[in-house]
Length: 152
Image (cartoon, rainbow, N blue to C red; front, side, top):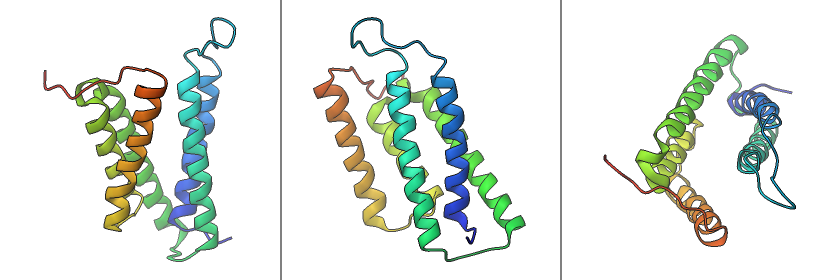
């Protein structure tokens, strides 16, 4: 198998997800019959990220183009993973101030650009679609209050 940017990023993200699953397993489960506990949403998010990383891995294997020497690739992947993790940490820290829409749109846009997506339609439409579906699921279906943008 040829190693390219997609496969390297996917392996790094999958390692992060494995760590996340281990941390999530330490959280308490539901408090009653069928109750959703604090581990539910992190588990759902880690599962979605895992599925997307597997898709990225598949894409990297099927379209093994742009193969670069491993030492240069390792530096590139490490830098991108570090930036991606810093971006997610900033998102978690400033989520309530930025609000659901602004914070999520910024993270998705920057994440897509960081992962190499350059097609304007995808960079604009995909975040809008994902955020709309997430908002409908959380705010309307599950009645979860999502934070609004706030400068103060």
